Image 1 (tube, one colour):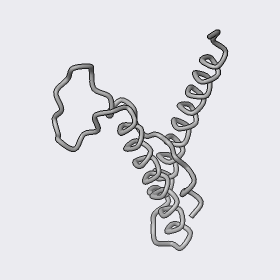
Image 2: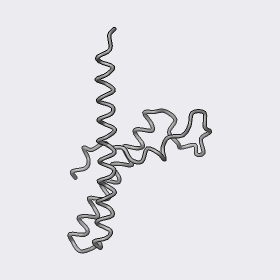
Image 3: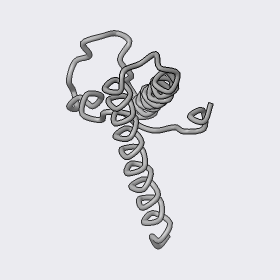
Length: 100
């Protein structure tokens, strides 16, 4: 599948909790790396779902509405992943320009 190489980020607002907030679930990620890994996995799942729904639509097994909803969700996820990637690259460039 095409989506296997994409490591994006899903909805940031639902993943971040305030500093010092108690965990509501024991399976919640506790470090920044774990949060990014979970969000990446969610984004990849969204992209794969969109792709599978599009294929089902081509085969006539899914309605046009479901195909459009899945594709729009995948597009939003991809745009968020690209925006976050751009911010990370910019932050890295700023750090690399700092005087030692």
